[in-house]
Image (tube, each protein chain N blue to C red):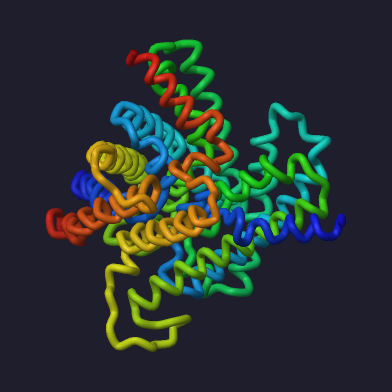
Length: 207
Length: 227
């Protein structure tokens, strides 16, 4: 049951509740950094890394520190500060000890602080703890959800980089050039993800 | 003379430098909460309140905050005001709180607010900063309302919850409709700008406050590595 629900959370985060295409979180990097495949992948890996790390830190702090002390109204301020501090810390540690990884991911790290997908993942998972779903979210669910959200981000970015590669050579009307056609393409990619609606519930029936 | 320029600070955000349609900032809430016109107004008003307050405080503290830590300081100030607005909305407009959900606290990472702090409030006196925030907020609300009206009318055939059309094209209130309507609105803005001979935005990064240490640099660096 536990494994099943973990797989369900993972698949849902990638396909049916894709953070970019159905929740509109992290649109700026989605539109801005998806021009080339390698930058798209680098950005997504960095985002996945920070998402998992941020959830790993914020989830216990919220559950075991803020809620028992009745300080949950500090959530917004605390989470953004934790994420900002964490990103700085990761940058420093990577630069010092794993320079190879820093060279490939480090350039994306400063922008992730203000990436709403990261803050969104850490906050949305807490709403699932409160709400009455088929199963309660544990720490493990939260981490898997964050990892799935990151992979979902990666899938959306890579797919979209491919679509944009095609757009480069297309003959587009003048006023649609640039951002408008990119958004229309995003609409079509998002439409294709609507096809997954109900997929996870059918595949892994719970409760 | 001074009065006129203050007036200009206010009006520039509404049309000429509209944060959503011309600077292309704050795309996430623009796409997410515009499924109905009333949601759009709720989001717009909440963001405007945060924008005006944070602009005022940041402008007051602009000589105190050291340059090196200004971004974290700005984020903390903005997060404080977002928490206040969140509590007020929860207390006095619980319906709006429910429909905006997660996007209300996410005003913290709305790049319009950080962008105005970085580009305007950190360099200008209090009064112009407040007016700048107000103008940008009104521009943001207007753009959201525009999208909200189009999407609600086409997607659920109603306006502010009032049923007026018998047909509804559900796709417009689903995520793809959001992308599509936004694309069309930007096309319209581009067309109007083109006519008045202004430069057309081609990248969403052009107006972003973080763009300096962002995409361009990232592209340059990976380009160098590849080459």
